[in-house]
Image (cartoon, rainbow, N blue to C red):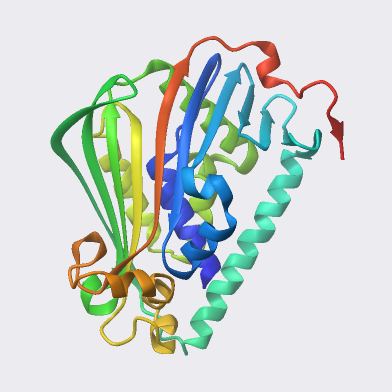
Length: 326
């Protein structure tokens, strides 16, 4: 169940906050993840500076190569060679995988996800409810400056719940993406083409349209396909480039089963939300996270573009001298 939940959250976060980058573009982006409840406490204790302050990444793209670097690691994607290099900056070593090897791993994980979904339905004696997804996108009219760019606020909400019932009646998940959109940046728009080409070469045309995390989530939650189609349709109405995005994932347990076995077996989201957000939930008033009764925030991610440059040196997308392959 936890694997299904992570795949779903990953898919939504990817749709809501990922910025792809392309030829001759270098950016800095800060990303911070905050977990609530027991997992949040553990992350705070063992996650170090990255957990408390976030991770700043530099992303350089030149031609068919993209290097993404943070304090301890880096990833180089070479579309022409169809290889991905992962670098350990402290140990000065790297590993390499071909697209073919990565496709094989992905197909294996997809098969495992389908198997887990089927087992979950079997344990529920075929009574696992059909889920449906609602999508809402609103321009609030609020404006502010982010990274030197004039932005307007757009809030996108995706709600997952049992078909025929509301979230508060049967439990579910509410994912809210609060985006500050700047006027369209040609460099970042161009760079999105790089990401699409990467996904297409790696996983095929379907992945280019939806992303690998989304494909995995669709394998486990078939009803998500309709929601994503609507999300893409509504998303086309949004003009501009997201400079600051806050994604909040909240869970709502059905009355009386937020942390019960029944709640976990009835589709899992409500039960898992109760388990992960129990401490936070107890600290909140009745009108909890995401504005509803009995709701608890599970995690929050914040992604901010700090800078954009148009000059990229050849060395920015090369494995540094002295690094050895493992």
